[in-house]
Length: 221
Image 1: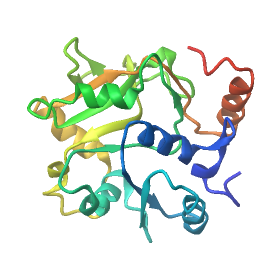
Image 2: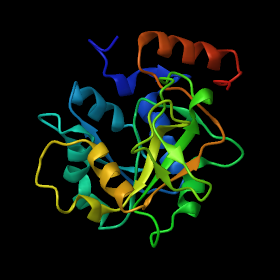
Image 3: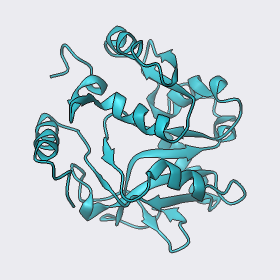
C-alpha cells in the first residue's frame, strides 16, 4: 500500500490520516503545525498545499531522526512554549468533548512536564494487549517496574515542554528517553480518552477501520 502513497496520506473514513490529525488541531484553535516528512516527502508536501485553515511548516528529514530527534528539529517553530505532538497514523473519534481541549484544560505546567492522551488497553483498537502505562487517580503516569500487561496505551497525542529537549546532544533518539526522564521526576501525567480510536499499523487494521466507519458505528470499544 505504501509503495506509491506514504502512510499518512492513506484514507480512513474518506480523509487522509494526516488530515484527521490536522483537523483536531484546527478544532482546538491551534494556528501552526510543523509536519515532519521523509518517505515520499514530495507527496505529503504537495498534499498539504491544499490546507488553508492552519499554517503548515515542513520539517523534512533527509535521514530519519526518530520521534525525539524529529521534535528537536522542529523546536524553533514553537516559540519556546509547550506544544502538542500528534502521530499521523492513529485516527481517533472524540467523546463528549474534544480530547485536545480536555488536555489543554488539564495541563498544569507547575506539576507536569509531559501530558499524554491515554486509553484503556482493552478498549483501544489495533493495539497490542501488553499496554504502555499505569495511571494513578491523580493522573500521574508511570511504567518502570510494572511488567505488562499495563492498563493504558498512548493514543497519539501529548503535550510537551520544549526545555525537555535542551540537553540532548544525540541527533537521533526516541521519545521514550524523554518519558523515562520525566517519569523519574514524577512529572509524567496522562488524561483518559473517552472516545474511540484505531491504530492503523497493518493493511488489515486499515481495512477494518474503514469498514467500521462505513457502517456508521465508529470503532466501538
